[in-house]
Image (cartoon, rainbow, N blue to C red):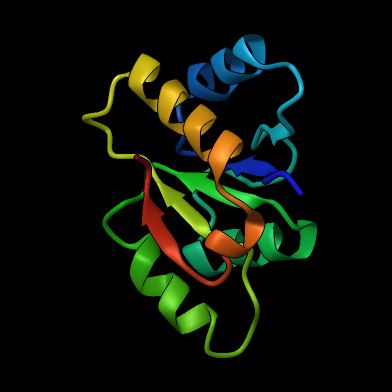
Length: 115
């Protein structure tokens, strides 16, 4: 089973758009209409958990802490952390590697850095 992705509102849309152009079979959902800009981390995690895809976020400072609290009472598909220092091309390549080699269980209830 392949991982599906959900962009956080803070993720550069060029990342998920570029990834879908590179590999059209990837299920990568944009944040528009799903995750409101400025939503609290707990809300973002709940939206992703309800929908099922792994959350891809640039919020590397606080999201890990909030995920630890969240998984104490709810299951999460997981979070991939994309630092702002990562170029769009490198982020696309990292996400492609994750999609090709990881399973949903590799991320369940975890926050992991994008390779």
